[in-house]
Amino acid sequence: MRYTLRQLSYFVAAGETGSVKRAAEQVHISQPSVSAAISHLESELNVQLFIRHHAQGLSLTPSGKRLLRTAKDLLRDAYAIYDVANSANTMVAGPINVGCFRTLSPLILPDLWKGFAASYPDAQMHVTEGSEAALIDGLRNAQIDIALTYAIHLTPDLEFLPLVELPTYVLLAADHPLAAKGAVRLEEIASLPFVLLDLPLSREYFLGLFERNGLAPHLIAETQSVDTLRSYVASGIGFSLMTARPRDTFASNGKPLAYVALEGDHPTMTVGLASLKELRRARIVDVFIAHCREIITDGNIPGMLFDAKGSGTSSRF
Image 1 (cartoon, rainbow, N blue to C red):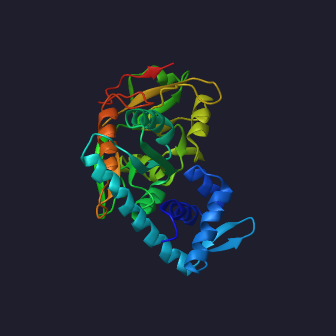
Image 2 (cartoon, rainbow, N blue to C red; image 1 turned 90 degrees about the vertical axis):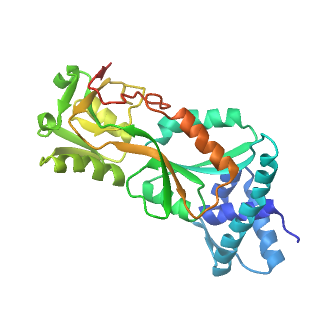
């Protein structure tokens, strides 16, 4: 055998990202090293693996697609050697590919990653941020081992471990007349200008709250950016509904915000870990799951303020 597992891993990174540059960033190596590994495999196997597009990256040939699936299986089996070694001692080592829903990643992921790396310095954690659909695709394609996300559109081929429930709250400018209240009802605010977080999962959830109560929101603005939404609200353009509560209660424009509980019996958003049922989990993934269960609990979520019962206490800064 005149190729190495490292060369295969570089090929897999290029095949998944469609770019030598992004592959090099993912595996923390130079671009020429990735290109050299691909060239070596093509020469050794006597097959073209990629079509090179000028300024547009790479696309896999049919042979490349078949090799990508085989290479990923081979690498997964090779890394299972770590499990054999780890079972005989307390060391946790090897790669783990973690996906994270993009609105959760800036809040939860930094402390989660730092703590995991500190506890298990021989683990190599790779992170992918994305939408719910992108994370599910990543799990099914074995690009992601485990995904931190919401339990909304989970299908039977996925396993989900719930970690914490996030109640909906009302996001207001700090000087809004309702900011001083302990809690507000949806009926009180439905006629006020509403700023919607226009992400596939979030849009459906928040608009569904109004629909379930026979209400129609006064929609004044939509944005796919949480930072932009918070700045709109802080400037008094409208209110919003959110579940994740950043500890930083100032918007990016420097203006303060208030978090007020939403009164009533409304469904919560469940944050947890999704994985593919048919994929045998490596020990490092089980250790990461245990780490998440220890770190993410009711009232103790990295990067967030949290009212576990949605009790109505407001946060005004």
